[in-house]
Length: 128
Image 1: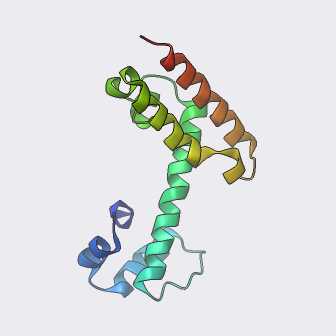
Image 2 (image 1 turned 60 degrees about the vertical axis):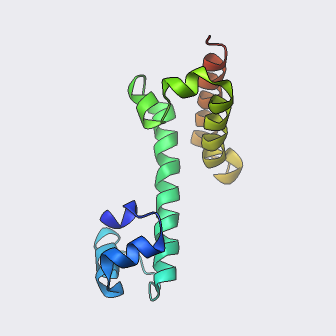
């Protein structure tokens, strides 16, 4: 899924040159999905949505199922963030916005992941 790594539609166009080639690659990954991928913009919207979905799922899964030190790495939590309170708060807020229950149909997993994130944040916040 090399199409997932691109940060802009311009980068995507440079790599693929041909929309048809990209559409075929996406169809291989999602064979049962029927989308109108007839413009670069439609394809880019699809890719952005897939990436947001995967990011959310990775955060929720990691918070609920992975223990340290792997969890720290997956969640991009490093010593600099831990030691600087303002960065720690920004880190927590970034993940909170993605996994927030109100953005995820109030799912049980989202609620549990948010609780776990807040536990980690409170524990790290008191770390000196």
